[in-house]
Length: 260
Ligand SMILES: Nc1ncnc2c1ncn2[C@@H]1O[C@H](COP(=O)(O)OP(=O)(O)OP(=O)(O)O)[C@@H](O)[C@H]1O
Ligand SMILES: [Mg+2]
Image 1 (cartoon, rainbow, N blue to C red):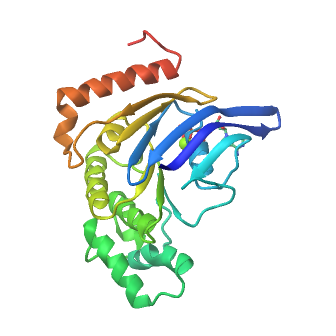
Image 2: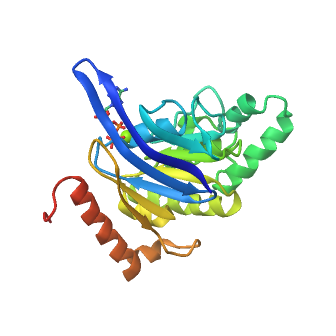
């Protein structure tokens, strides 16, 4: 059974100039412990999809299920990460990472929370920065800390909406490898929204291509590459073929078939 099951979801925002259909028949199935990368044209409804999975919005029609259960309200068991890591400047990095535990597990001891946060910070290469304030870290380091915060409470599902979009290319590739290593040590189920096709192939177990707005599932591409893949794999023929294929799909989604 899929951990996340989205079937036939349609939704329209109510706007002053009338309903704006954003999703129209979206399907998505994510098995437990796997990583689904979602790509699609700008404005097609990707962030809307994340709100549905998190239970922040209920669709007009169709079903969103976690563990077979209809999602009808915000879920504590969902972790979220966004493009701009919203770290609290008045808290240290360690205390930022601990924050979800204070909310989800208020009865745990401070010592156990600190141990958990330190363990994750070490995994992402931030040992020694626990006492720093967010502004003392680089953008890539802040995003690492934000990643730790989004999984510190072991959420069932991690939803990431273009988390690496604001980073330079090298830092972004570093973060992809950090994600890969985190997954190996801390299995979680992830939906990653991205506009970077290489990122979708490097991190995804499947890549879901959404059509232009209103979005439906246009293509589901399994990524048949080893879990311990390195960046080099993106230059191998099988990955390059997938990237070409995805580029063609995006052109179709943008309504620009045949353009090069
Ligand atoms: N709360 C809202 N009320 C009305 N319209 C909205 C609302 N949220 C989003 N929209 C509109 O719905 C459409 C889809 O928005 P959404 O943010 O889901 O797209 P997206 O695929 O994430 O875009 P991007 O690639 O730019 O991040 C857009 O046209 C947006 O303007
Ligand atoms: Mg968006």
